[in-house]
Picture 1 (cartoon, rainbow, N blue to C red):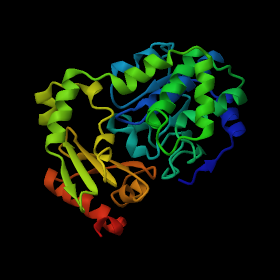
Picture 2 (tube, rainbow, N blue to C red; picture 1 turned 30 degrees about the vertical axis):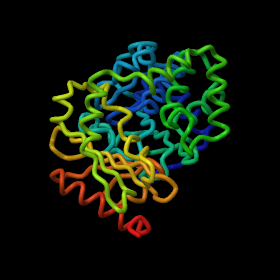
Picture 3 (cartoon, one colour; picture 1 turned 90 degrees about the vertical axis):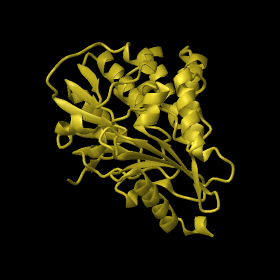
Length: 322
């Protein structure tokens, strides 16, 4: 399907003329997916529209301060909008029935495969939430505290608390506007970045002690197996935020995290610096994302999956081998 790319005004017009709006987040939802979807749903509900958010996976409890603000609308969808979803495969198996029915996609991934009927896309945005922020005044919606805490969370999580290279002056200005609404930004930052359960620390210990290095220690590979998760006692809430760990090691250009899925395949999360392009690497394996953060799935046994991703990193980034 060839998508029709929209302006902000055209996107606002589509949403304003629609009702019974279903907002879809990607599987393994993160702060941007949840914050952007809930923030937009709150905006639509404030206009008297029915809107709800659906996801393949259970939304972690730590995001309940956002989801609890939504009115629990139930309806047969009249309009389907995917937010922060670059590829319909990322909706997950439970949501695949909607994959070919997406009317609108709002996204900030340059690797978006143009699957929706219409798309609002800006790959220069640090988070999908920035597009939602821009839409609000065009739709005639005031930035309220409940919406602001959603968009702030989304921007903070996708920028590593505003420290990643994707953070722009506009990102900071939007975050400041959210803070001006009186949101508990200190509590949000602590919850998103500082608080860890004992089970999470145990999972990190198990994962880090088996980390592998390649290409003169420029590539670090961390594995999270289902057995590790079980033995640590970690829950779904404890699994988010692990992919940046390998990239934090001094001298690492490419940090890889392999997370075993229920079917035995591995979800690959890649974090890179200026020496490597994560999106280019993951694209070879059927995935995508951003230059510094991307992902894909490899359906191979663990050691073969590691060999595969490491080989592709070396092929796409030959300098890492020198």
